[in-house]
Length: 124
Image (cartoon, rainbow, N blue to C red; front, side):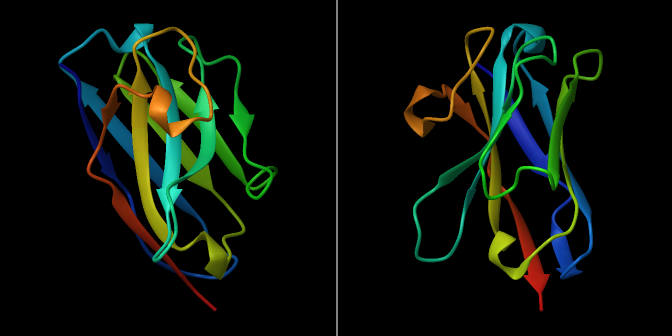
């Protein structure tokens, strides 16, 4: 069983930056494909970014491409999401997910484990 805990959310002005972290425990982190998703009020959870087991095969939603960067540190059992040039429409609860394969995809249903989420609010 893998436990995921997100942190780093908060309130930021448009144009600002935040770095989200997701700490994993209880499994072999280096064997998991990881992803970030988000859910805005009144909307379904949507894909943000994914990263393969070794840090390769990163992929981003068009809405965040060029502004967000996903990375991981297998020695620390953590995955990160660096968010720059934030916009009000980035406001959401951000979740990290783990899939019990070396690579994951952009479909929410693929993931085996989820964290509790961290709130990101971007003011205009």
